[in-house]
Length: 309
Length: 257
Image (cartoon, rainbow over all chains, first blue to last red; front, top):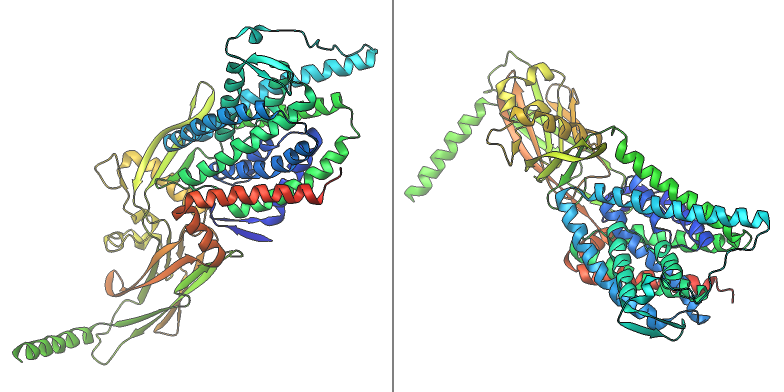
């Protein structure tokens, strides 16, 4: 069934878009990630203008993350003080991200920067994750216990000034890395149409040593806030949030996520992480190919007033 | 009183003048195209009647008709990807000033590509080859230096069905009634479209007429498009509220704990 998207100004097959939302929702439920890094590229590769894809996925991430954040809230698995600081700095990062986004767009280099960012970011994270997961799998096979990090272990990050106490996480760390992390995630989210959970979660665990049971809920709160701000900013500055596209993606996403979460409970953690790493690397390779391969069409047209053709 | 006499005389003269040439009456099947949620494009039929009277001189060439549907002008940046350090990125570009966003030409079979090369048709911009492109950074119209971008523009517009050339698409029903069908694709931009109809004998322009088609979004689509542009902040907040609501509903529906 074809449905007309009022902002993208194209007709799309509703079931194809719904299917994409559901499939990405399934994977995000399975792996416990937001799925923006999969959904935005999928939309771009299926012909939705990149501007509309990035802006609309921001609102879809709000829906999927809000639903998950609520359930963590009920179970009191959120460090609100940490989340508030991440949130405020994330909003600053989002502001910068939207400004850069619109600047790149008028220069005609948005697609390029988005592609390069996806290749480097997803490539690096995919390799790190795969490395860690394969090691864990090999260790489990050989019967060795997983290498546990002692809570007392400190890195250079813990030597920074401006220390703050986070009671819920039992942490006493400098505010600098927390604020820096928040800004970086907000910036990347607005620029690339990703929630950033797959960066924020490992960063909170490995860099700040936030207890694992609080990490996901806390990062979800930050993602809901920054993506809400990103949605409003994209709406006001480039009018590219397509509400019809967003609704289809949201409904598909939340339904898919429920099934994904159920399947995910039956798969071992290290295998799940290895699969996610392969998926992340796959998207990175797809973007790399689009950058390196000789394009079938070297020319493109853009309306000066804004929208893509 | 004197003025009225002069006016009447002028009108009488004008009437004598037109009696020599053909008169053309044109009608459009759908002067208003409304885009709603299941819009998948539509066809517009242009009808025309050529009226002759006893005073009309005999023509030794057959009638030829060209119909041209033009969208509103919209400045476009055409970019070319170039290879730089192994990756393809947008390099050279040309800004094409105000080409019509939509261009659909139909002609009678007698007006094919070879005939359209004549200056009479070039001046009316009938046919892709005859469209006058002006570039922001070049003085000359259709500057040969930008021909690569001109061709790319026409090719890409053609691929998205926004530019079409249907030579032979106008058919005569009898001697004096003609008909042309213009395809309006699903991705048609909104605005006021000009419908130009020209009647020729050989290369001589006998009559012309201009009608218009209004393409607009209606209902929900119209409302959302307007809201997104004129009340952008409110629209954005609405999207966020909708997302939070969807998330909350999903949490309630699928609650397991």
